[in-house]
Amino acid sequence: MSNGPLDGLRVLDVSTILAGPLCCQILGDFGAEVIKIEHPVKGDSMRGHGESKEGIPLWWKEISRNKRTIGLSLSDPEGADLFLELAATADVIVENFRPGTLERWGVGPERLHERNPGLVIVRITGFGQTGPYASRAGFGTIAEAMSGFAHLTGEADGPPTLPAFGLADSICGIAASSAATMALYERDRGSGRGQVVDMSLLEPIMTAVGPGPTVYDQLGTVGMRHGNRSTNNAPRNTYRTSDGHWVAVSTSAQAIAERVLRLVGHPEVIDEPWFATGHGRAQHADLLDEYVGGWIGERTRDEAVAAFTEAGAAITPIYSAKDLVEDPHIQATDMIVEVPDDDLGKLKMHNVMWRMQRTPGRIRFTGHDPGQDTDAVLIDELGCDPDTIARLRERRIVH
Image 1 (tube, rainbow, N blue to C red):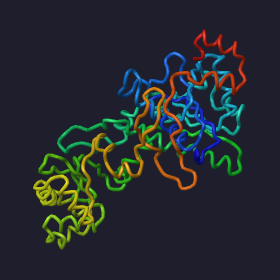
Image 2 (cartoon, one colour):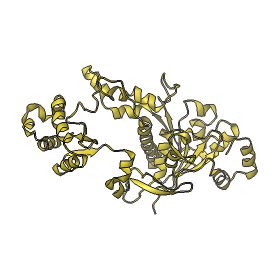
Image 3 (cartoon, rainbow, N blue to C red):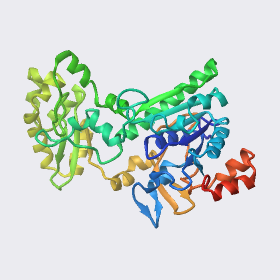
Image 4 (tube, one colour):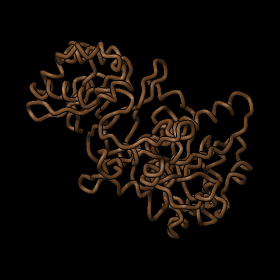
């Protein structure tokens, strides 16, 4: 069975919480051997995020799947030396300490590249390695607020709204996995040299929010909140059905917008000049929402979805996690899979993010306990003296 296109690569995950660990999860999902390095006492705070069952953190089982775990203190000189030994065997390191932290511990990029010139070092911070904000504490919430996302999210007469999940971190983690593979491609294409990737939480979500800075630069205008509506097209909103459910409708394509208005019994508006563009329709969103919302409100969720689907229009129920797990398309395409776990027997989790024809990734195992693989990595693979590791364990330099 294929482990994936990155089979044979070794990644050291010395990041915490979400963006870096997600980056490494993706690399591991597609075949890389990932070694998760945690503080020997504190561990990764990610272990305490989200729900748990019988004291077992559930999010950890997914975010740290396909990763072996060791406990190692990089701030201690002996721990730093062991880290350098590990780095000499690696292809990628992903870290998210504040700028200058690795350098202070004697394991900064210059020292790492002395030991391993081909090493790719992905450095994830709130604001990047340089600039006046580089030393500030940076979390996803800060990036979501500063990027323009919160400014554009929420009702028009309500406050800026933050997401209820790690949006900025997740976008950054996905982007960081792409950046790492780009750097590896450049190295393996001929240069043979690694490089430092400076990745901030802020920039990927700024890109996702859209061209607001360009619009401001050229037109001097600033976008505002519009609830679930869009300034680019209409009808686009959430609508309540007669049986109390909610559905979402999108009409990004002109042909879809025309189908929707024919379906809801108002084909006359299609001939209006303003209906010919998404921007023009958005300026008449009140009228279009009245037509679409009124039609949907007289039908059950299943009736509305069936009618839209038959008409070739875009609609979906608003899903909860329960709905996702039970959806026939999600099940048929294995977007959520059941995997074996040493602690919980079996559990469902998101599958790898995309399908590859010849070298598909896979979930080989779920997240490990703290320090579960320390001896296997340091003693069996690096050849460290067992007595030395035992001494360092007593001193809490390794776990």
